[in-house]
Amino acid sequence: MNRLFVRRNQSAACVVGHALIRVWALLFCSSLGVLAQSTAAPVSASAPFSIRATHLLGLENTKSNCNGTLSIQDNALQFQHGSKPGSQVKIASIQAVFLGGESKQVGGVPMKLGKAAAPFGSGRVVSLFAHKKYDIVTLEYVDSNGGLHGAIFQLSKGQGELVTDELVARGVPSSSDEDKPTKQSTAEVRYENK
Amino acid sequence: MKTSRRYSSIICVAAIVAITVVFPSRLPAQTAAVKPSGVNGDSARQWSVQVHGIDPGDIELAYSFQVAIYENLLEELNKTKQFKQVFRDGDRKANEVPNLLVLKTTVEKYTPGDETRRAVTTVSGATKLTVRSQLLTREGKIVLERTVNGDVRFFGSNLRATHNLDRNIAKAIKQSRWDVG
Image 1 (cartoon, chains in turn brown, purple):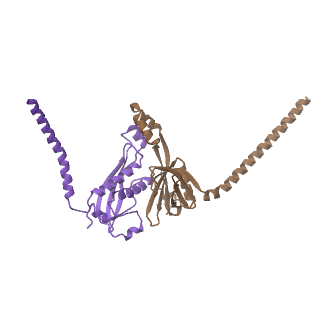
Image 2 (spheres, helix red, strand yellow; image 1 turned 180 degrees about the vertical axis):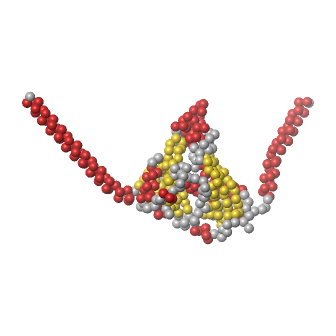
Image 3 (cartoon, rainbow over the protein chains, first blue to last red; image 1 turned 135 degrees about the vertical axis):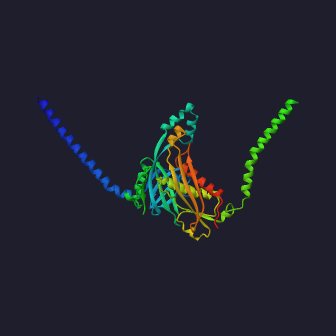
């Protein structure tokens, strides 16, 4: 009986202890969350932002359809391909940012050749599944002479919004709803600098 | 003797067919080269051109397509070496150039395609673009007007249609003769 009583006392103490630990852990996590939220805003406004992207066309001194890193740092947008110095666009010169989407076949030329060589047209079945959705970010900017330029980047799905949001946060004014086209055939969203 | 005659007649017929096939294609080419009207070739190189931004008109054309048409057009016009200088829209340097033409491009028709549909079916999913290209003087006089098509039917992304379109525009300008005076 005594032993049983002692045991019960011990388990009650354990329960209380566990409960205290849980409450403490909950408070600790929530305080961490609050800390993260309070520090996140100033970091995103000034910290360098970089993301993997494919330059489709438009940037000067950069090959079309080349992979690289798209970064935003010190009021300039930069695309760097490999170890070469990247081409830069001042954020102040960017007039508009557009976000769109497109579905593309993956695998490039080797995949195309493989599909063409596959017997009984089975390559077509592969094409049904070998596609991926991408975000297309389009920039309109002006050079020092006032000449209009355009640049198009392809990013993984969901990352295009990060780039446009970052540009908006860095001073490229976002458009209001009335600037957006009423119907968007390719689901493009426009952020225009008026 | 009979077989040799038959062979010779066959050779004669083949020669006649060959001549009729080859010469009609040569003759118009020769006459076209002699035509001395309008501006083309070396005389066009005295002119510079300013490419205006793409006017989508009433068509709901994706911004990426508009930018791609504009950028590819600049590249293709530079490639043809038809003009002394090719200026961008809004370029202040173009104001100082004496012989300047303006290239306006208006989208007339756009059929959105699908790369996956093209890859699976081959016959459907083509992206098609039709634009009206106008070459104007500073005063607004239309020097050349052409309706040009561009599409991607089999291989390549949808944006490739803009590349094909711009190549056709540059080709149309190069092959056409226009009268500025």
